[in-house]
Amino acid sequence: MTVDNKAIWWKNATVYQIWPASYKDSNGDGVGDIPGIISTLDYIKSIGVDVVWLSPMFDSPQDDMGYDISNYEGVYPKYGTLEDMDNLLKQVHDRGMKLILDLVINHTSSEHDWFKESRSSKTNPKRDWYIWKKPKYDAEGNRQPPNNWGSYFSGSAWKYDETTDEYYLHLFAESQPDLNWENEETRHAIYNSALKFWFDKGVDGFRIDTAGMYSKVQSFPDAPIVFPDVEFQPCKEFHQSGPRIHEFHKEMFQTVTSKYDAMTVGEVGHSTREDSLKYVSASEKEMNMMFLFDTVEVGSDIGDRFRYQGFELPELKDAIIRESEFTVGTDAWSTVFIENHDQPRCISRFGNPSKQWRVPSGKALAALQSTLTGTLFIYQGQEIGMINLPKEWDISEYLDINTINYFKAWSEKNKPTDEGYQKNLDVLLANINLLARDNARSPVQWDDSEYAGFSTGKPWTRVNDNYKEINVASQVNDPNSLLNFWKKMLSVRKEYSPALIYGNLEVIDKESKENFSYYKVNGDNKAFVTINFTESPIEVKSTSSDTFKSVVCSGDSQEESLEPKGTVSLGPWEAKVFVSV
Ligand code: NOJ
Image (cartoon, rainbow, N blue to C red; front, side):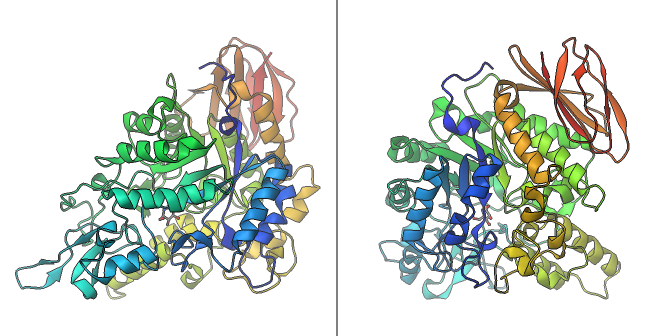
């Protein structure tokens, strides 16, 4: 790949994701809000961010924290008003940044007027805007859902609705009915209300939620039994990258997105290289880039994240290679991310969250992320090294619908009198602590005052106990802080963008369980990155005949240059970045 001279703004960009409920509260009601966000824009800018991605701030009953939208054209009152959004947009733009919103259009909330009409009668003009099916009956005459599809949030993906004696499909919560994308009128209503309304206000693009799920296999067959111990089964193959998905994305692009200088990033999760390219090849005219889950799901079963096996470093490398390589030699573009509102904190997941190694391993992961190819996304609090919820917290502190439903379903099936109950419970609780979405959702730790400076009132969800040690205020002026390391990495990333943002990834020593080392190569522009993933010092040999100069050492050492085939010494969790001279 050669340097992209057209310098498309979203390729070079570093994006900062804000999850509004837990970001910054301005009025003391314990819930983050838009004026709170506005008050921190100078901070965000100072990190080196170009684009702010705001997770759903639309009107919503908040069963799934805003991913259940009851009105695309309104703002959740606790977050603010449409005027606040206009102000946010202006303030972001005034600082030379861009603003993208979340586009949640696989489903709405059951409180959306469209669904209220749809469920009211079989003859309502909006009946077909959602996916309704007749019940099935078993041999004993008991009513059953139309098929065995499981919801992502546990249980059946179908909900019986008495009013019309039919079931509706909900791949997520019961209160998130799936829209029927087969209906053309529905699609155009979505384009107008969810996209055009906000584009016309000046937003710069969208992160597209569950972007691979709109087209369902219309025969709605039973899914194969993957988990014999549960009734309802993963059903991805019948709704992920379904028969008409690319037709729908092309239509959406042609009808709306193409009319604006927009950035679009689709959450696709799992797809083959061939299929990924259909979404994000520039020539396909669907979306600019996508999130794949290879990295964030390492060690987990893709049908069920809490069935966790663990992983070794080479598996993490493989995942990163898969996500980086699928665009090589094509006109497609990729993303780099390791945290978001659905993932645990990366230091707890991939680094070492202990007091001694939290900052060094956070720097190592920052160096990794900042030197990979694609548009870089960081998540609120990642830049200061927020870590997972304390292990000793009770399960009742976990408020995410996904965690709650999973734990409830597990508790209904497993009884304290069962053999191995306590051991299985302990494993599950450890996996929840390691992987639950709640880990990303505790309030951002701004300072060491009560409630971590997030709010003056009691926050809607508990602040992590470690806020006095981990907070923004204590890091801003500390040259050795993780925050300042992130700032440095983001500027190094821009300075050496041909190799770091655009280069091809060439991993060496792939089987090593200790170091993650790679070249980034783009014509004559080369970088060498080597990272120690252990708590002991190690040495790594460069395989290149080039001479490199050091541009980053995350630890104490100062490397001046790396001779051809030279050796690099790395302290525990140390990362070093070199560029060719
Ligand atoms: C993906 C979002 O990131 C997640 O938070 C949400 O629960 C589901 N999609 C449903 O919208």
